[in-house]
Image (cartoon, rainbow, N blue to C red; front, side, top):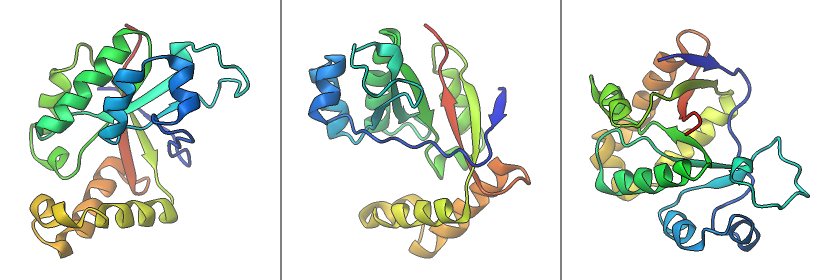
Length: 180
């Protein structure tokens, strides 16, 4: 598992899959409707000319769950994302916390992919990490079931961030699939 560090470059996604312009641009209304309903974000590449709307799959980057923890909804979205990858879209998978912290879970999820992706570690600023914590706390109905107790969420996320950051700071890891 190779990993690239990108200090100070936390992935940003200006567009959401359900936006009309985006859906017209890439022409996968059915697939994107399902993905948007499940909360998947997709965005045009930061490298792509924002005025260019030729609909090239290579200009679109799709984010989806890695499937760590084997939750059926995450596996369904990962399956849909992998189908888009087979059509030429760039795909980045995110790790689900706290499941990725359990021994063997990350390796198991990676082994289910059609090829081994490249791990990219993003060092988070203090404000990015604080925003991450606030976002997790928005899932109040799932917080206790996922983290054990409400109070355990922040320390578990901090522990994960420190482990992934390996001394460089708090971080998150994403997995980029290569060309099909």
